[in-house]
Amino acid sequence: MINDLINSKKSKFSSEKLISFQLIDGKIGEISLVNGKLYLSFQTDDEKDLTLVFRDVAGVEMFNIQNAELSKWTVSLNDPFTERAKKLSEKHTEKLVCYAFWSPWLEEPVMRILASDFEIKTQ
Image 1 (cartoon, helix red, strand yellow):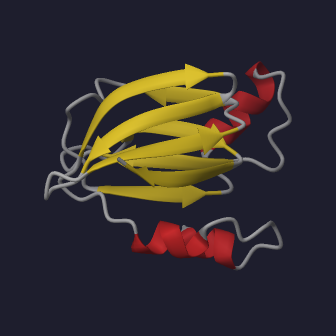
Image 2: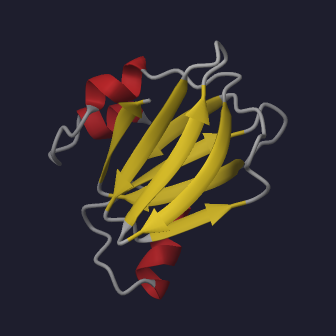
């Protein structure tokens, strides 16, 4: 799915960060949404604390995500969540990307974020 972004004509917003960021066995902590930005505290498997900041958030879907172990994340331009957000959000979703966080035990993402971009901040 990262290839969707790399090969797209959309901006190449942080492709290298997406590829290099590993969240296997990491855990999500506190989540807050302020003025269209979603702040997600994340602890890596080697206990480094990071904050993922998502910009221009149009939608968030999550199920029991805090302190859950994660196996991967995917990034997509055509996730079904984007279509649902188009119907329900007042924001334009054409330039937004769906970031999905997956549990090692489920076939569905446990969290999806529809946003324009993200950055990783170390603490």
